[in-house]
Image: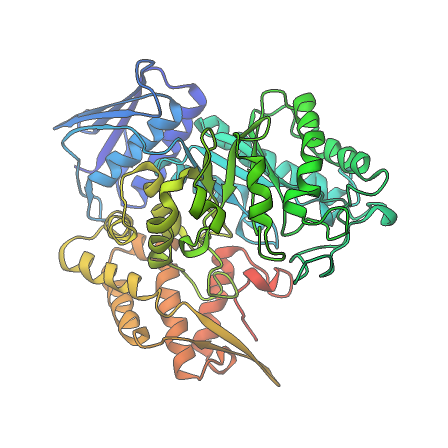
Length: 551
């Protein structure tokens, strides 16, 4: 059997059209086809109003399957689950799942944040390639997409660059909406345009109790404690929000730091002072322009630059979330909770969501050496703090951490509670393997986390990238090289496998050349291919997200 057919009972036309496109793409990757012929395995989709909370039911037997879901987005997740439970050989053959699945996701908000900046993949790739990432997320149960319009680059919303970025973000949100995903925007509480009035700009040095300057400041942020500061913040924010007002925006995420914040005497400590004094004005503007939109309040980097910020913020949520806030967003690295949360817990009526790091941890440039896996890191974090959350928006800088997207989405849904188990399922489905190949490839991918951490040293003619723990580099290379030679061409040429193979090649060369990528022609060629896959341009793409080719 090498054909499937899709029938629609009552999904929206847009959603089913994208489902057909997704099915055609993922089956083509495995040398199957979507066809209405009589010998095709037929999947019939429907939305059932009696189902709630993104529940779906799959009834599959020889010849066909019926997939009923609570909504259009859940129907995509049901299809993804059917694919995951089926077996593909990557060469046109498959054994469809047979049985019944009745599944309700564990957590209500299963999102993903696309960092659309630095000329990374989300910023530079053809928009159709970004759409494919959104489609894959829907298959994995994602139900919300978060994006950010970074204002500091532009003089106003009429700046040509602002118009271009706005159009790109709107296209992503519209595509997600067609599937049935909720669209959301994040924004720094006091960010400003490059043209923000200099007399109103925020302070950013380490002072007034700050032991470190808030990271990422562009020095165009606005101080709400200065006369006219709040009015200027609202004026610039209004200009931005009005460009998205016609879209169905579920959430606005109100963000404190990185960039953002002010260290002046009247705003300090920002997280429980300037940030919170500004919030009612922000909420009023949201009610005016986007009356159906709710707010997520972020606590990102609380206590990172000044001590006691969580302690002084906690009273604001002691009796429930601030007006209009649905969720408090946090991320506790390695599950290390603030003392006030450890001691007092989360107050009644307050829901937390997380913002897990899946892209940048321990390795710069992010994705610069190929695929990055953070299974042990995510396990440590989830084991200690995961019970606090009602979902989250993992932070994504590109496609090099696709496996981490899979881990977090399937953890939110409740399909897997252990990251290593999720990696095994990912390998089985994406690489179309079982048995010994599944065991060996899963072990190889998991081993790459040991060698991910590296430090950069400056040399007279470039840089050295020293892998902290290179012990398994050679064995990973041998495994990936072998399967690169024996797996089907469509599998090994796709980016989901290719990025792992290139990572193995580059790491092996770095070990052999004492961390000097310029010393290896093989390394340079592999990094050049990474640039092609990421749509990165050396010298133009920011160094944080560009493979260090030529360095």
